[in-house]
Length: 406
Image (cartoon, rainbow, N blue to C red; front, side, top):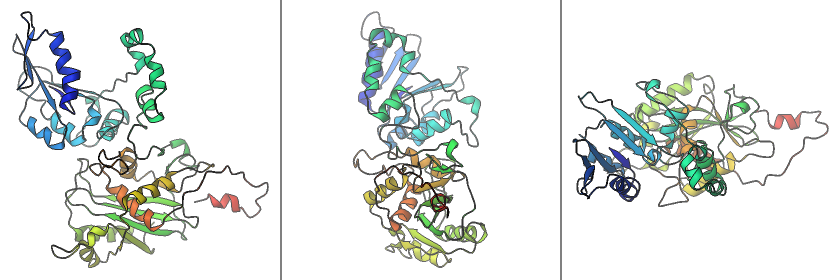
């Protein structure tokens, strides 16, 4: 079975070329094509099924389908949920080897899943590393294209930076539509904290202010982040609590009171949180009580308190951009401890909404992003022009060094 995201793509890239190659509709045809069933039947009885998944629900059409080989072209354009449901079709009792093939470029809804499995090779329980192989192919590997159109390389070199890095260089850390292309996870800077947003964990100073950001979810994941802010206004996201199952973007269905009890337990036992004053900021939606007791009231009865966060989406997005920007010393205003793996996984792969191109696509895993956004809006930062800074010739009181200590 061959899958593309939309039917026009499927028709142009697979159905029409195969019909031409196999001479469908002629006396010498190797197969016949049934347009209503979207299937190609060969003289020996073998079949190629053609399908598309433009929406999340389209994948349900293939429930019960059994195939020996699945080929998903431009797989990153499908969501992780769509991809996993389609792979369930690869089954049967015959002796034919079962195989799955993905072809894709960086970017799209499935980018995070494909990158985790094939690039980062970060497997979860139930996934076997030996089942996954990645074969990178760049334009230079396409001998036929290089012979027919050697100028194509120059066309790729002239693309905007994100497209060039993805399509020419095969860079999975930069792609078109990425909301935060400035994000950097650079292990070389984990200790120096320069030119990276991810850093080594460390013990917080007693003078920092602690904020707790919260985005509620039930069928979707809930997200809690704890962020420390030093006296320079720099943020350190040092702890996360993410209510997600092994299935990406699927909530653990924990009711609000239990979430509150878990938060209270964390804050009373974690050495970085125990005994500290913590300011909670949450999505204003938890104060809604149209169907009874509000989520805020439920959690308050368990001793966990929040103030209403500013839900202005575009302003909140810009606040994260301001904080992720590096100054001339390579220092941002927001760091993430490397132990906060879900923030590190979900934040850099967020993409823009096709219908609202200035905002994040809310069908993505944006829950931790929202929790961070509420804390950022509570502590707004004005954008600053990057002006080259030079250390002073003398710094007897270590004021320059102390500025970047935390």
